[in-house]
Length: 417
Length: 148
Image (cartoon, rainbow over all chains, first blue to last red; front, side, top):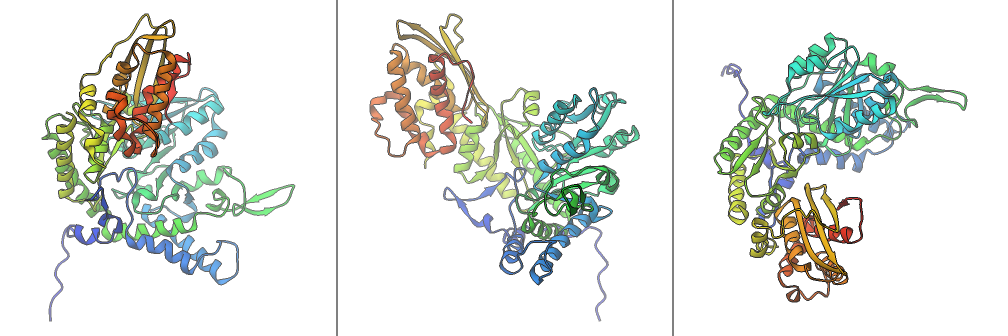
C-alpha cells in the first residue's frame, strides 16, 4: 500500500500550455501571425468554461430573476445568487448583503460618489484621491465636488511611480470625508501599500474606497483583512464577461445609503404615496440585472480559485521580471514606473518612436499592447509624456511572448528609430 | 496590409526632419488640433497675402504619421490660394477615408505617400488632424480641433 506523499510546501507552478488550450482566442492569428495578447490590463481573455457558463445559461436556464415561481426563474435566481456567494467568498466579504452587482468598477465608484458621498458632503469638505488614479476614480469625485462644493485633494506621486505617504498624512484633515485610492495602478503597475493608507485613514475616522480593478485578477484580496469600506472591481479584467462588476461595501455603510437608481427589483412595496426599498444588496440593483454576466463572473472566479491566486501571481511576477530585464536591455527603451512592488505591467517609451506608431508596428507582428494615456492623463502629465506603450501580462502569457514583444520592438526601431 | 505602405520613406523622412516646424509670431491666423486617442497635439500657423498662403508652419508633438502629414501639408500649401488649399483638403480627406475615392494619387506628389494610411483605420485621424486644423485656421475658428 502506498503512503500519501507529504503535502508540498508550495503548490506546483501553473501548466501554461494546458491553460492556453482553454482560451480559444489565444489560438487565433492576427495579420498572419499567432496572437500575442499583452493588453490584459485593458481587458483579459476568457477560458472556454466562462464562455460555456454564459451560453449554457442562455441555452437552458434563462428567465428573469427574483420574479417568478416557475422553474426557470427559480433556477436563474439560484445561479445569479450563487454567483454572488462566489464573489463573497472570493473577496471574503462577511455576507452577500455586502456584494452589489454593478456594470463595472466605474459604476461602483459612481454609486459610492452619488449615494454615499453626495448626501454627506458640505462645502469645504475634502475627498482625497491619488495621482495614480484611473480617470474612473477621479471624475466621479470631481462631479460630486461640483455638486456639493467639496474639494478634491490629490496625494502626490514620486518619480518611481509610488505614492508619497508623508504627503498623504499631511493631507488628511478633519475636513477629509473619504479616501478613494487605487490598489494597483493601471498605467504603471504600482502595487500601492494600501494597508498602510487604510490604517492611517481609518485611524482618523476617514472611510476608504479602493479601486481594485487591476488588483483582483492578480493578487489575493481579502476585504476584511484590508479593512477597507468599499472595494470595486470589474469582471472583464479577471476572465469574466464585460458589463458586470462588483461593489463590495461595509454593511453598516450600505444600509445607511439611499438607493442610487430606482426601478424594479430594488423595492419591497410601491404605492404612489410611499415606496419601501428592498433589503441589501438588491436595494442597489434596480432593473433586470446582468444575469448572464454574473453567472460568467462566478465561473471565472471558480477558474481563478482553482488555479490559485498565489500561483497566478507567481507566474505573472516571473513574466514581469523577464519583461523588465529584456526591455531594459533594448537600447532606447525607458521603463516608466519602477516601484519595488508591481503587478505584471510594463509601461515604456522607445526613443525616436512614438507609442502610437509602436502600437501599429507591433500589431502587424501580432503583438497586442496598449498605447496612449491609459485613462490616467495625470500620470502621463507627471512624466511629461503624451503617451506610453504598455505591455500587461496575464498568467496565460509565456516568456516566448515577451521575447516576441522585444523582437517586434527591434523591427520598430529599424523602421522609425 | 503592409507596414511599408504606411511608413514610406517620405513619411519616415518628414517625421525625422519635419519641415516648417516653427512658431510664427506674425501669423494672420492659427489653430490648434488635438487627437485625444494618441495625444497628438499641433498648432498650425498661416500668413496670408491677398488670399494666398504666403507662409505656413506648425509646432507640436505626435506620432510619425501626424508629424509627417503636417510637414507635408506645409510644403504643399505654401504659395497656394485659400481656395486651392481647401480643394486639396477635400482631396486628402477623400484619399484617406474613402475606399473607392477617385483621387489621382500620383498627381498629389509627396502627399500621395499618405495613401497607405487608409488601410490602417486606427491611424486615419493621425493623418487628417493637420488638414482639419488648417481648415479651422483659415476659417478663424477659435475652438481647438478634436478628432474624437
